[in-house]
Amino acid sequence: MKFTDNEIREMRKELARNAFQSFIRHMPGDENDVYGVIAHKLIIKKRDVIEMSRTGVPHDLAQRMSELAQMFDIHMYPHQFAPTTQICINWLTYAYEQDKGNRSRAKRSFNHWDESRRIDQIREAA
Image (cartoon, rainbow, N blue to C red; front, side, top):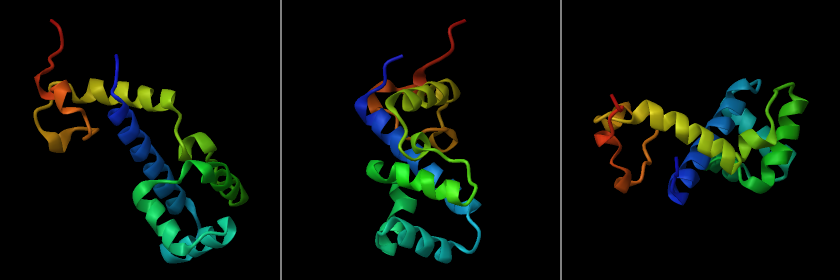
């Protein structure tokens, strides 16, 4: 199955955002304190860390985020913070199988399908 560059880009953002939010949930302390710890350890501004909760970890910080996770005995790795193209394609394939034929956008597992794909009209071959 072929996916568009836009679909891959959107899946990469979604996976990176999910990884960061998962990391935050596993960190000890409340969310505000955790943002401060991350900012201090990565030597970046706290507002940049807060932005990561919406956008995901920038690719150049993925290795350092993984090292920070290891410091807190959280098993997360660079490919989770900055997913490879193949990881994105694998997740898109899974999402496609879940979403095909689903007319309701609210019930789709991935909401960034290219409009030309017409996911709601695809049916399983009999």
